[in-house]
Image (cartoon, rainbow, N blue to C red; front, top):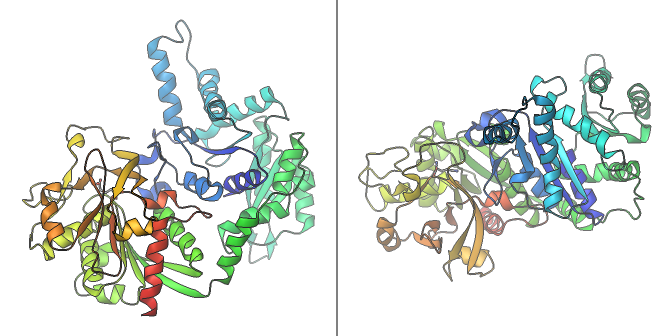
Amino acid sequence: ITAASLGRLLKARGLRVAAQKLDPYINIDPGTLNPYEHGECYVTADGQETDLDLGHYERFTGIRTTRDNSVTTGRIYSSVIERERRGDYLGKTVQVVPHITDEIKRRIQLKATKEDLDFVITEIGGTIGDIESQPFLEAIRQLRWELGSSQALNIHLTYVPFIAAAGELKTKPTQTSVKQLQGLGIQPDVLVLRTEHVLGDDVRRKVAHFCNVDVEAVIQSQDLPSIYEVPVNMERQGLDAICLKKMGIEPGAEPDLGEWLGFLEKRKNASSVLTIGLVGKYGLQDAYKSITESLAHAGTFHDCKVKAVFINSEEIDRNNVHDRLEGMDGIVICPGFGQRGIEGKIISAEYARTNDIPAFGICLGMQMMVIEFARNVLGYHDADSVEMNPGTTHNVIDLMEGQKTVTMKGGTMRLGEYACSLVPGSRVWEAYGRVDSIMERHRHRYEFNNLFSREFEGKGMSLVGKNPESDLVEIVEIPSLRWYVGTQFHPEYSSTVLKPHPLFMDFIKACIEYGNS
Ligand code: GLN
């Protein structure tokens, strides 16, 4: 959030920025990780599966990320090892220093060499002392030394715990963490202190004194009602101005945060509360991060606060579905993989359809809407996805042709942006502003089976978005209902604070109307 906020502030000063995340784990990308490990897997337009922080970067800055914005130890090592096999280091011992650290430095600078940028903000995940982050720290030590203070700057984020029993804020972890960094040859230029309670000037002075940091470069990041207030809080304390000054750049006029402040004002004044049920199997705040943020952006746009309630699909059955979903102004059927929690999603889709509650199915959620319709409207009782039931005779969700020969799991799904043609006159066509074609990001292996197209269309589920080349169904909707839409793509990846996604805006509008009806 600090990196994303700094990005927003520098952009608001008219500078060209990119924010990048370095993750010290060995996976090539988080695509094969369970969301319980690091939260949601985010996908860039160019099809890289990445850490969810890239979602924050895009939502805060409005600048699209690419595969270069996400780097893991796995990617660093695999390119070094590939080069070793090719013979690029012939005759040499390949080592962490300099080969791995050189590759890290190259990746940090790659973005700026490809695009015309003023700043690259590189966030290193993890905590000082982690064994796996050592090469990353060594790389930034070297980089700062090579580039000098006018070209490189180190910002260190620490946590200042509050001991409630003693009523005291403790700066010792910050001091220890900075000492460890200094031991590695890195002197932070700026410190950002995460705290639940506001720090007094005395605390900031003490930290400055013990850590060799100017007192005005000790910034506090206290808990705020919304993460979107962080840039404003950082600006008030001059984070962006200090960074510029330290690099010998005259900060000049204040950043233009007009639109951003407008969003915050609208958010604060939002009068009504909308309750949206998120039907999914991962009971973890971060697992559906982009969805909850997209709902919040669209809610603010329509002057309401969205209360997203997680509803565990594994616990939903025919007997309790009414109790679980009653009172929701709208329902999102979430993305996911595998069998667990599937029936609860199908039952929820049926409940939304038969009670005409606005419902938004995303990726697996769309597939569950299709299966529910096939079972209960078309009468195919064994209708299923071959992901869950490979032997079903009514494979309404089938493995994509191109996936049939795929055996490797990592990075092999249908990933990233693809075109989708919209059917004129459909609800989604209206929602997108009557455009004929859109681009959206994907992350799936299975698809709507076009052999059943006619039956679905005949009974009232319209196929309103298709890929123009492959004919893959990208959007389904039931036009006779208030708002019942399923998308094979993930619209949540491209909603930003200043540009909420059209489908989320239209969904929220329908939820408000339903709530008022
Ligand atoms: N498991 C489904 C597929 O692979 C849906 C994936 C998703 O929801 N992201 O097609």
